[in-house]
Length: 58
Image 1 (tube, rainbow, N blue to C red):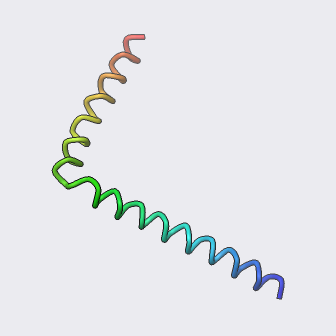
Image 2 (cartoon, rainbow, N blue to C red; image 1 turned 135 degrees about the vertical axis):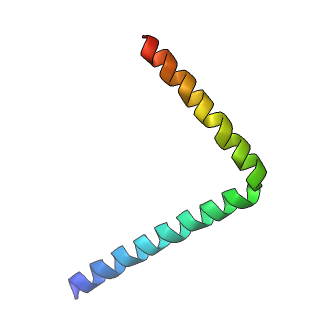
């Protein structure tokens, strides 16, 4: 009975984590329209490139 109890608790925790993760992703998609998210994605690589260039100079 103990092992079943622990497996049940583990399954419930994993299920809650997955539900929260999916819910967060859906909320982010609703808050940010696809056009804005694409613009954010375009600016992020530029910033990372600048950071990598500065780190290479050092």
